[in-house]
Length: 351
Image (cartoon, rainbow, N blue to C red; front, top):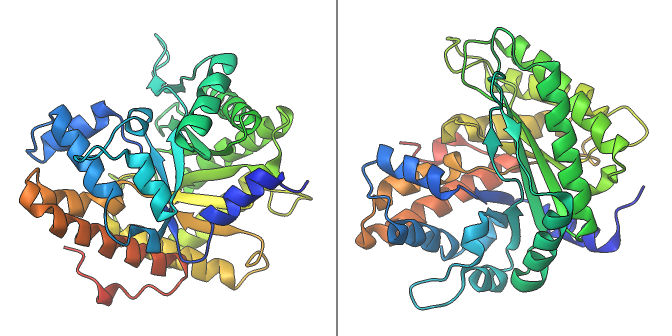
């Protein structure tokens, strides 16, 4: 089924060669936690200033096609009163918004469940975002933790349904939906265990998207690389990570079927910037040699990997804004090259 014309236009703008999507949709709570770890006072003004130097980075549009914002950011403006969304529109950066309401753990479950507004209310909200702020896409996230008894079939099923429903409502609102089934890196699991659970999560989500009637060609997937747990120990070559990641996605989303998801936004999931760049580079190198080189798009949608070093440079000091923006642009350029399978890590300072 071909994409509808408006959605197809958004997809073309987002997936332009050599560009990625910046995930700047951290909630105030998440930004506060990040600031506290780095010794930056988490005041409302510092959070606004942080978002301001991100969206006003000169030349960001050379490497970034889209940006995901937290809903609060849609209403914010720069120090001189210019709305952030206006700045982004002038740069030609496509604006997206986090559409879910975060995660919660039902009593007795111990597993994350995605929260969302009622479908009718969500539809009204997304239409308002589109008409008032020029939002063109959404992102809905679920998180799956690997443990002795998790993720359970119940959590996989419910979260798959929530993401599929969010996608359906987003499409009704005229927005391109990206759904994010993240298999958490925290834990001692092996890369094979990560792959096994990822395939189960992807398969159920694929099933729910089709069951709910979402046009497969109009949906994007944001997900993690298939890697071992953070506490597993040892290292795995980036090329092997790329191969395992592709195979998990191919099996879970049925690449060999009549119709399948074609656009994938990789998340860093707590990985540092260097491995995030290496994995994306090797994934695109792997894909370009296979039968899906012209059919599938694999690009980055990083937050921590893109912003963390720049945040260290800024450190809450207004005098460091220009240096922080240069660091952000350097990372954006590196990930642009990784998306094209031509990143040379020796060209950059990863410290």
